[in-house]
Length: 301
Length: 319
Image (cartoon, rainbow over all chains, first blue to last red; front, side, top):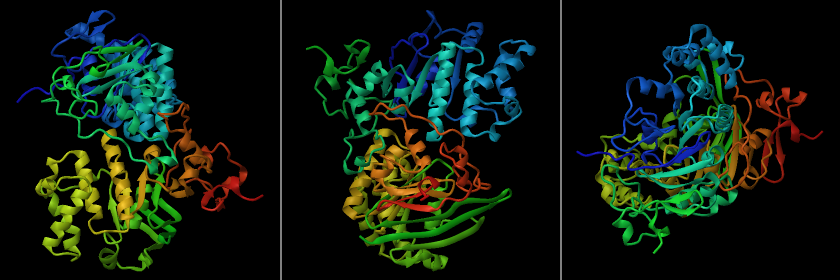
């Protein structure tokens, strides 16, 4: 037996009012990262500074305060909502837990529903989760995440269960709220194309490491890490030409996180692998303003 | 090229306590041999029901199953269930279902999955069938060492390859792919699409590719059928469908796709698809359509545009 190193020595900064995208394939550690930041999991090492205060080791009252200033939106809205609670009860619960007086609660619940465009709110207050569509329920989840006026919201694949046509609508609504309340958002997704429109900066995760960080469009239009370049190349936009060409993919599959390869974790699959890649873990290297990549190809000789 | 599949006025309704669900409601199209048809649309528009109607995989609560389906020259709607099973299902047309990789029985070895359709129909002896299974596994890019493994010993991508091998083992003409990659990771998805393209060329297969992922659909599609609320509202070559679609719904659907390699702000289709129990009268897209006119309360006819495109919309009717 050993440890699954789901998030293995990751460092980054999220700015105030910024949407920070975390993109990666399943099993790369992105959800674990989100849960660690929200302190739903306790990191075994390292620090998480929130407004200058280390929250990696807080408990009790301090943790309750941290719960109030953070919010979460999960992938499956049906799984994230208690099926026996009405929308009103669901939205009221965080307010009740954090001591908002009763007279104020109803007003705030109604306002929250209006903000996510579930109008008229009276029509939704007494509905139960199964009576709403996936898109509507995800908006309730967004309203819940914002109802305590948090400073940071972690959105873990908030639209990947929704129909393609509802995804854009939901993300736009999310962004509107984020701008209005100047909230920082960590947007966790496997989908580069929504990350492009929704995030200010993007980080790419592979096998528990962040391998690239940069401004969203810069990472997509000018990717540096071999993993990022290949991932972006294989994602198709609708185009009748696609059917005539084959995609250039990486061989093999991501490694087990219980026993990752030494050195760079992409080295067994990387077409540019060098001697050093299998021996030493690459450092984070700055390639241009705000653009960093964890790859030996960019190290100065 | 000849027509391998012709569908005329196909209906499939399901009985529920609230009324009949009109999942496939008068659908007509045809596919040429070796061509791939992508069927795209939002969830609940009847895509999977169309596949089930073609495969005759029907649940007990079917209230209407009618129409004409001609597969490789055989009018299959006239066949009994037994004849359909002997002559059509898995012989002429096979099916890779949604989340197919989870449909393999965990206690049955890969080889026994693969030989079953051959043995069941008496198409081969066991030795020949095992040999075919070995070949087929190699064809989909899996080492023959995995022949005697159990499904849980394979990764998701490999299991999906096994299911594709299973759909091809009887050498059918048509393969229905129902969201074959939507449960897979991006890179694995690209590998599977490469494989499907290779198989299409080498075996001259005809695919019906059902998906809500429009970008991925363009990886295979020669023709595209856009479904909305149980009907095909547009049918035509991919050069039209992905570049300059005709139906207002197809246009809205295409522009809702976030583009990775282009700068184009995606837009959304306001509203939600209608209930298939009580769909709106006339054109079913009317309540959401930006171009709705009074005449749209009447059911629009199927209008031919150019050589190969069809659209069901009053905008294209001659005045």
